[in-house]
Length: 134
Image (tube, rainbow, N blue to C red):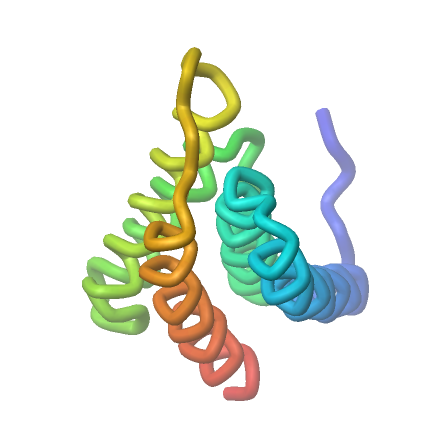
């Protein structure tokens, strides 16, 4: 059984994950410019995943899997209107895209896909940032 983290440890973890979200999001223009669309799509998911982990940690909620993060985000934040349904859908779509890219054969991301997902990821992270500031 895992030891329970202290409030200070949860706060530090939340800040670390939020920082990782922003660092990962900052990679996207470079990956887009170089034509690494699959990697850009993957990193868009991870930027949002880190933001979701930051929010969960802030509220002392832990998840053991990526699917668990998606479920807990929906249960604790989207269903209560704290995170918009639009952002919840964006995170789910990014999750599905990452799953396909990592585990399915002959999946190729496009520039159009990256350009569609990037602003949605930015918005998701901005929403999470606002919640983390409260």
